[in-house]
Amino acid sequence: MRDRFTDTLYGLGWSAVKRLPEPVAVRLGQRVADTAWKRRGKSVLRLESNLARVVPGASPAELAELSRAGMRSYMRYWMESFRLPAWSAERVRAGVDIRDIHVLEECLAGGRGVVAVLPHLANWDLAGAWIIARTGLPFTTVAERLKPESLYDRFVAYREGLGMEVLPHSGGSAFGVLARRLRAGGLVCLVSDRDLSASGIEVEFFGETARMPAGPAMLAQQTGALLLPFTLWYDDSPVLRGRAHPPVEVPETGTRQERTAAMTQSIADAFAVGIAEHPEDWHMLQRLWVADLETPAPADTLPESADGPRPADGERGPVDGHEPQDENDPGGPLAPRGADRAPETEKP
Image 1 (cartoon, rainbow, N blue to C red):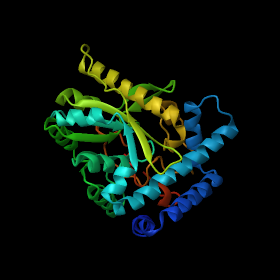
Image 2: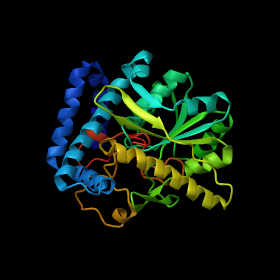
Image 3: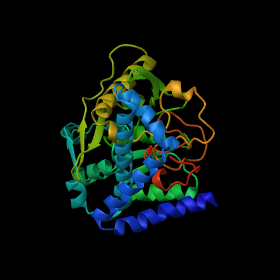
Image 4: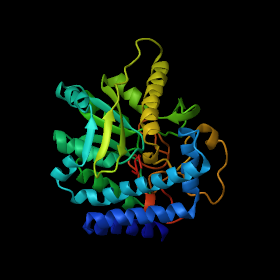
């Protein structure tokens, strides 16, 4: 019954929100965000705990205001995502501005594949739709399976409708398909700032140990693709901003494991730069650092996820780094309290 209710709420989000005038949708998102923030629930407190690592000198009052801005940013993501299927290609192209995107475009034009990696900053779905509208080329990503299955199908259909090829993470074949797309000169996009699996690579992140997925670095090594971090943010305009960071090079020496660790640390460093500059747009409402993972969560803590409904339990590999949750993340604002939430992944 709960799964059906969750699926129905998301269906209403996509069917109803996209019909609202944009100013009305913006106000609705802010109202929902402020209501959630005022409740001071576990997800808001977890967000503040995470932000305390990013802004270590912030006072409790400053962290509270930052988390309020963070919840508004998070709801902006959802309002945009519910409305995105109705946007024209012209609206999408006008709605995003990413600096140094020429690095990606020149690489693809030369026939070399690109692994684009992003943290949970601002709206990665919109950025993906913009890349497709700008280049005319699709890209491939990975999504965890969600509960209920009908909700997973909704998110897959949503992303496929934007022009993305979406691979299920389960089944063990995703890595091979991604490698083939890259060897053919294609684009792979992965949200990669969190991995709780046994294969996660430990990195230093804002002065503490966290885990991030090995998949992006492994793909770049095996296929010769360019590994390119991106960070995104919102400003006071309706335009999503972003930038490409310097490519992550494959070290010339070391074992495969050592090279993978070094490259993953470089990804973490690039993410940290973007998150530190725009902490309010980092939608990390779940535990991330190893020190937090080793501390049992209170029994009433909301399910761990920054993205929305979680996928079904299952073994995870090194490709996308989603905890039974997605790159692209579903879940979020419509998940009932206590329901599985996701993302990456991907808000799925």
